[in-house]
Amino acid sequence: MAIRAAFAKQKRVHLVLKGYRTGWPFPMARLDHSTGSPAMAKGGTGDILTGIIAGFLAQFPREPEQAIAAAVYLHGLSGEIGAAELGDKCVIATDLLRYLPAAMEQCAYVPDGV
Image 1 (tube, rainbow, N blue to C red):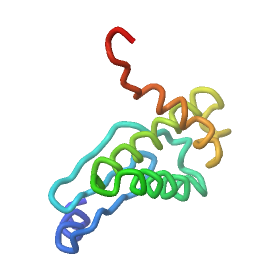
Image 2: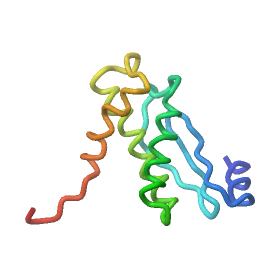
Image 3: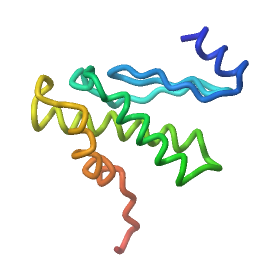
Image 4: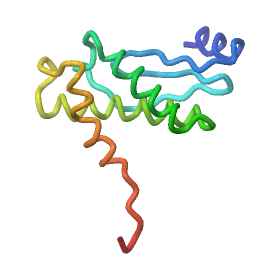
């Protein structure tokens, strides 16, 4: 990972390393998260991740690190929720989209008194 982090820093790029637990070395720091499931080790899940990242970057272009971090976290959480409901072997890439709203709901901030 150190070589990839050095590459990201040198090239000043955001590099997402897709795995069942995805990591991303940012130009100035390396961040990890703890969501994901072996159920996501299937064709097409990286394409879903790319789409979620693109959507978040389009909405938050001035906050790329936060947008990418949120996308990667929610992608993994969607996989966890799908695996819990369907089982690791039955999750397919498009199921991640089906469980994305539930993942977002789990992360939603609800102010006191609402």
